[in-house]
Image (cartoon, rainbow, N blue to C red; front, side):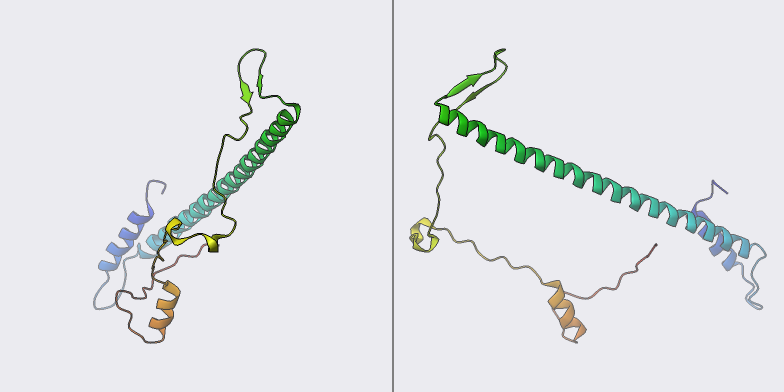
Length: 166
C-alpha cells in the first residue's frame, strides 16, 4: 500500500468506474476497496498538509522572534552610539582607539548635513517635486459592482475551489 500514490489510487477508481455494466449499473467487486484506498491516501495527504502548515507557522514564529531580537539589538546599538557620542563630546574627546588597535571611534562634529523641512507649505514650488497618484484596480469595489449586476470591463469575479483542513 505504501508504494501507491493518491493519484494512482484515483486512477484505479476511474478505471473501475469505466468497467461499470451499462445495463445493470453494477460495479466491479474491487470498486469499494479501491475507494477505501483513495480515502486512506487522501487522509494521509491531508495530515501531511496540516503538519506542513504547522511547521510553516513555527518557522514564521521563529522568524518573528529573530526579527524582534534584531530590532532590539539595533535599538541598543543606536542608543549606545548616542551615549558614546554625547560623552565623548562632553569630555572633549574626538578619537578613541582600542589598545590593540583593532577598532577606533572618531567624533566628527558637524560632519553630516541633512535638510529639515519644518514648514513644507512655505517651500517654493521650484524646490518641490510632484509625486503622481498611482491607479490600481480596487478589487472590493469591482466585486461589489459585479455582484450588483454591473459589467466592469477588464474584470470578472472568478469562483475557485477551496479545501479546508482543520
